[in-house]
Length: 142
Image 1: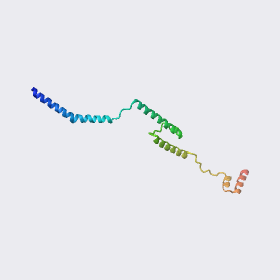
Image 2: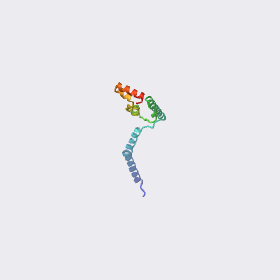
Image 3: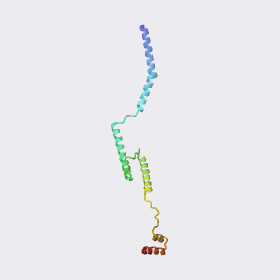
Image 4: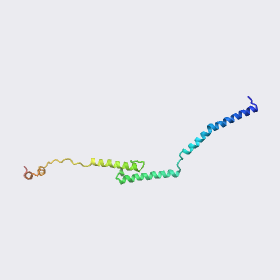
């Protein structure tokens, strides 16, 4: 189909109007939203910021090691992870408490010593006759 020049011009005008309408109704709001979202996207950290974060992490790791050693928990170096100083203090206190409880529960607890020696039995009861009798029986083998 061949269009006359007037028809072609009318079609081009309608296309241009539709394009303009689409740009104002659809494209402009989308571009505005896109610009808003671009401002909200966090920027990638620079090399200096990454290096600073790495140094902070290394420093905090050293602080964890030092705190553990100060509290006599150096053997647990590398096992304790904390997100901040408050968390570290809480974990150190909790670990110290557990270790102290273990020390107490595993410490030497003397059992009641039975008095096998007759002299000790009489001495405990403050029986001097029995004490003398026990000593003499040892001497003379009774």
